[in-house]
Image 1 (cartoon, one colour):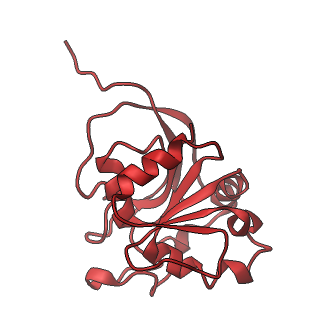
Image 2 (image 1 turned 180 degrees about the horizontal axis):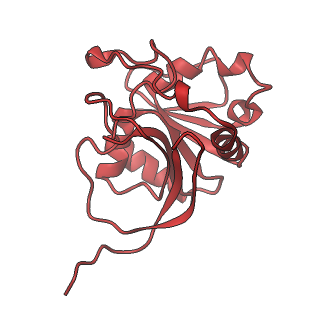
Amino acid sequence: MRNIVVLEHISLDGVIQAPGGPDEDTSGGFVHGGWIAPFSDPILGTAIRRQMNLPFDLLVGRTTFEIWEPYWPQHADAWPNVNAATKYVASNTRTSSEWQPSVFLSGDIAEKVAKIKQQPGPDLHVWGSGDLLQTLIKHDLVDVFWLMIYPITLGNGKRLFAEGMIPAAFKVTESAVTANGVIVVNYERAGVFTTAS
């Protein structure tokens, strides 16, 4: 079975929208795009590169795919694995792309992703893709949250747990704090959620 690994840049108040650049995602009037730039350092860069070099296929929403589609084929030297990975794209409007291999999913995304998880292959990495994430979280399809938690609050924007989450237990399997205060932490599912008796 393949795991779904969510990899997100996230603010202290849970915002994941447009971390990379000012025009990345301005929906909802979001004006803080590019908010991770001041926090770059070697520790964070090493952690991200290690994730980028793992075997994976991508599971992304249409918006993230369309941001990446013109960029990564031209920058294969920076992340060769992303071009070789199968890109599963949740979209009700797109059916094809020159960026291959790509598979477009429409209709009941949760059901289709659950079936893909059962197939042989590498883990499915989810970057960005705020709307898709809400579907994955709602249907309890996420196995791992690999988070980069930045020491800022943004006040508004798309949030990782926008619609809440079912009760679930997680364990920390690795963590680090960068010189600029970014907490890089890996949370893996750890069975059922329990309360004090």
